[in-house]
Length: 120
Image 1 (cartoon, one colour):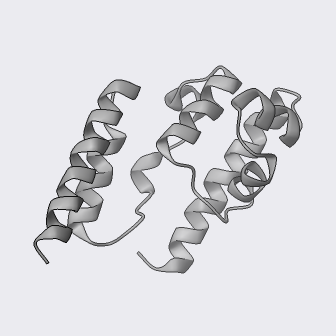
Image 2 (image 1 turned 180 degrees about the horizontal axis):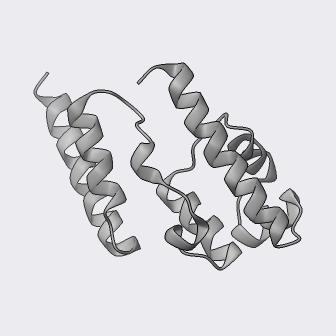
């Protein structure tokens, strides 16, 4: 995916997040505090400069008292990397049903990465 297309998706995601925040009557600072994230990071997400990690996205959704579906946020369009292996790894991480499952997937990926580095 080109950087231009990725930036458009990030902009759309950020705009939707901003819309949800404002509909709840929250400032960026108030939402950031409620989600326990840095307000500058929230600003960058809303401005399309960054896409939140799974953990940050969950914090934001919990702070807004919404599910991903209720928020109308579509992560299927987001590709961080065109590499099919990276895309599959991200798909697996995003399929986690809870933090325990996510941590299990993440630890497996870290162990694999470490093993690959040793074998270089």
